[in-house]
Image (cartoon, rainbow, N blue to C red; front, side, top):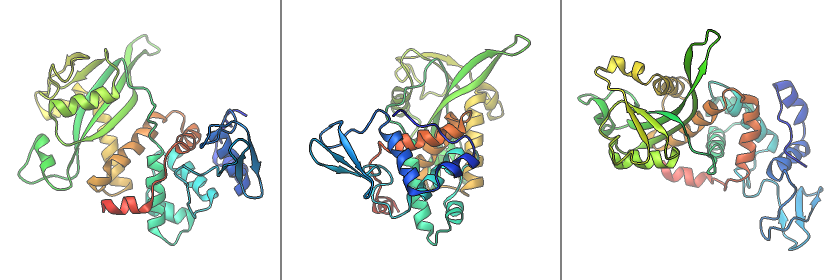
Length: 316
């Protein structure tokens, strides 16, 4: 069948997804672009039982719902509303809060909207994504308000303060006058317990290809042991006011991240921060193709295990 085309604007979205059947058909093509594959026996011969919206495997007779084993698994929310939420979250540049989702869907429960958003954020991380490569700018920042009596990376010892590490590809190009310029490429963000070399090394090996060149501010956490697989360019920061000049791309990312968290969500509890970072990274990396991000989100989400509400409540 091949992967379906994504809606290029909100008018096309409304035309494509008017019924449950049209949403299911689109989801099926996103989940099995080369044809149905049975999740139980890997058989490739199945019949769609349209009256029940189920696939019947001809080999093992197992019945599979298009939403089973996805973030929409066993959800009582209509699939049209899932599509609308996914579309808004993926394409709305400033992001959207649970309160706004609740208003958009006309839901009486803010818990339902909050749970939907967390499920969608889980669907934004592709475990098979390629690591960053080339020239990389890396640094850390503290998410949260000021902490009395503490400075620098020691602020994270205070309540509601979280250390976040970021790495962004630096891409070079020539402008119309032939001048060499830089712009930000793909991004990775993660929370850190500390800024020591062990924590930093773990982040780097998980997110950056060996042999890449790292541009840092000279913090001792970026030691020779932490960067053993990388080339290292140090730009020493003598005063905090110069930090944005030394690492302009990652500092612009941190600035936009803080504006988004404080403006759209009015702050984030540290125990949920990583999922918000995942959402920010997802949209940042697809900022040039926001409409295609909707289809990408559905495609990744179909490969994700369900996220029961009780699992989120346990964190509270």
